[in-house]
Image: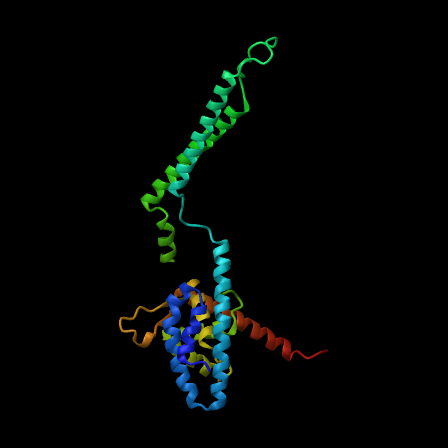
Length: 168
Length: 107
């Protein structure tokens, strides 16, 4: 039996945003329609119960599917770049640079195993400096990009889109 | 998303709001009356359709200072009215065509 209390409980199956917007209205309307259906006899009441239960549950399912599809395809309007990412990137860069330095120091301290070969000549171009350079470049580019987006966010530009859609 | 051709409940909701702003109960009753009791919407179906129409900016909520008992009135926007007129003329054309074809005798 779909009573107003059960109806209000079933409204919880709807997405939160939908509940905020319509649940109060829907519950009030249900009560009005229920009172009217009760006056029309048993058959009308059964039809009302079946119609409301299926309508409510199917509606909840549709709203969830709709919300799911919107969340999946909607573009993020706000830019989120956690501050911890910048710190982590700095730590990683420092670790890489330190590892390269340590590697060079170990290389320099090693005695020549075969005296006939002579001292090991330092390599002009190694793989690691190139990787470090590439990393440094992308790090700098990322920082510049982040700074631009951070400045834009501070200026409130992202709110213009919401404002424009509100006015339509 | 409300798209053409409109479903019967959506069309009836728009027709119900065409004359005057209405709240949920009034829309339900008007639809029942318009369809001679053939279409009776559940509250879930009604508010699902209202939500889609609100999202598409075909209808809007009427700001009421004294909205008692959780009632909220809705009205057509200019966009909704334009789309309703478009749908009505589409149906008119279809009815004309159907009448012409139906009365044409086979030779």
